[in-house]
Image (cartoon, rainbow, N blue to C red; front, side):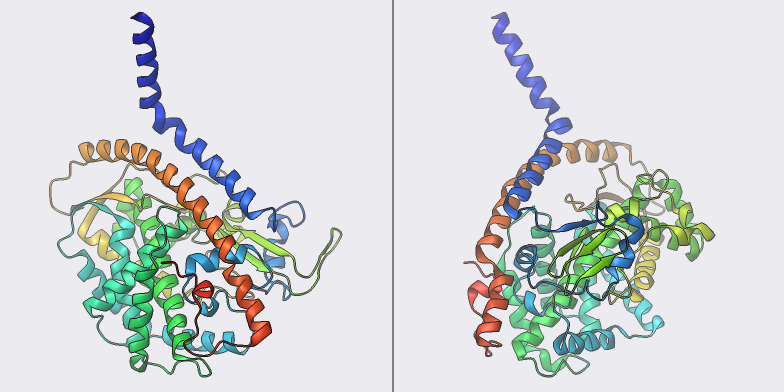
Length: 459
């Protein structure tokens, strides 16, 4: 009986301790599985060949401009972004098509500052109406930025149908990217169909030379996926930082925009929206004193590693890093490098994020005790207490802390299983490889011929 009791106690102790050791082990296993499936393609930057001091130089090199063609890693990103990854502005190769869609994007984003601020304020007001208590910050932000992006494109208030379609698509893409759910292609296809029915209502002329489906795919990728997901992730990171640092939150609430800008900059330093950006070299890149990167190489630019390098105590959140002349010496490229397709919204995003943050801080006190990582798979659990209401966050924070640890157990296991399946499925479908092989053999596909294996549809 004593042995049985001891075994039972040992089992109970192991079960109770799961949140403290299992997630990290599963994450390490997932990394090894991904490496085995994806192989060792890619030159890490910064790394042994290209150090931190040459990161931006190599990133900006004209020969580091290939986007997808020739990289097996592209199959995975195309899989996550399908349908229409071949029309996604980030993944288009240089040429007339890219130039045309980039011009259209600039026109759609070229709104006066006052108009952008007012639009963000209206969208935030609607999203925050009657919200209080425990929320997931990313879930709260996605419908708001769905409305915002819709109005940028169509120049009119966002119908409920459009908001729901865009939000469902963004949630699906974000969940797949973080390996917490499989893709639901039906949600994405319904958004494509809606966009095709409404192309005539876009407020600027769409790129010429594209079929209607290609035009819909362009809007789908640039404004209904990337814009909504990235803005929602950025705001969730920013609000979670404020929730976890009450003194910073209070100063941001009562201080000027300069301090809030420092908070945003430090947030994007610690939690950059880009993890690894891969580029395929279209020519040789000579490295003075350390050899040459040959044409056809896959460069994997690691944003988090670059942001951490050369920064004292890099894991500590400190907005003061960006106060004063030393800030210009920090490794900090939250919107990319100007010479190599920076984020098209590099000017607009900080403006509207500042407005939304002011709206949230004007209405609520934020509290959270959950972990904070760059990928934020828990979607940012947070307690929102209306200002002026009794503020007693203690029990809620204890609950959040315990729930987050236990959720991390099943979430890490789900990421292992779902992530492994999706990486395998992406390598099986080879969407990017097949696209370029088909294009070179047969030329552009005619309208209506989007084969399932090319767009990544699954039943």
